[in-house]
Length: 338
Image (cartoon, rainbow, N blue to C red; front, side, top):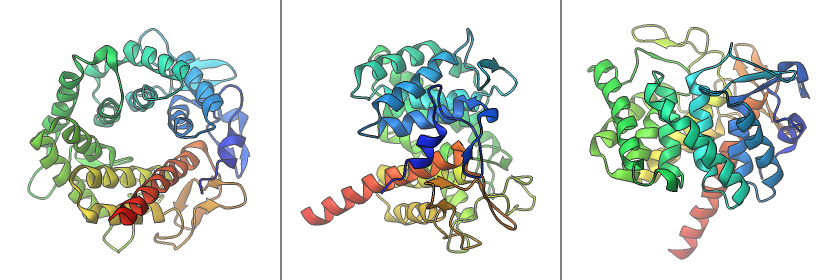
């Protein structure tokens, strides 16, 4: 059962707040494009999500400025200080998924934002921004780009393929010289492209890079996320802390995308392990779920857990729970019909 209590508490008429102090939403933390994009994806999956989807979509709409999107708002003022291509990529992913909404008003505003902002993806230098956009385009219903969509998807996937070919070697099967946050989105996007257009090169690189990533993350029989204290540089030391919930979601969705693309049940098993990280299948055997609030603690630290429950962490948990619930139902139906 997905728990929305803390998400609801973090949301006001403007959107979802960025941080909380313990379980108490912090109005002084402001709002981000990242978080409201994730929240929109959650709302799109809720039967009762229409009002929330409208709230988050409207936040995304207001966050646009002439050239792109602003990633941060506080006290009604948008700031460019925290703008990033990655946040724009997440917004484009959310808008692409919004094009499949059965609510016409939500679908229209998402299509409008997508049409306005998609051209800037051709100037992206961030591989994650490219990958978020690519996943969205592979899963959306975007009639205005119907004739050009496959071409755009091919262009974006080829940019990731070229990065991989430039950076990988016999021992390092990756797109960059380091592993940082949300690594799973990179192979996930190539599996998504393969599922749509059958690109065997995208499949091969998606497979090789995800295998490389999984070998690093699941070495002890459970998920060990790459810590944010220095990240993991090629030839360097793998940091264990702090482990962030958003990264568990990233590897969960990468493994599920791979499973849905090629049907290898090993990916399904690894996805379940990634999901179980939230509830204690981790290096400390500690749950990051606050059963009293429905929130998710912000990190697994060297001393235990960070007890704050911000939007990113809580939304990552909810997105995994939603997807896992849906797939559990599908697996049950398959077993009953077989």
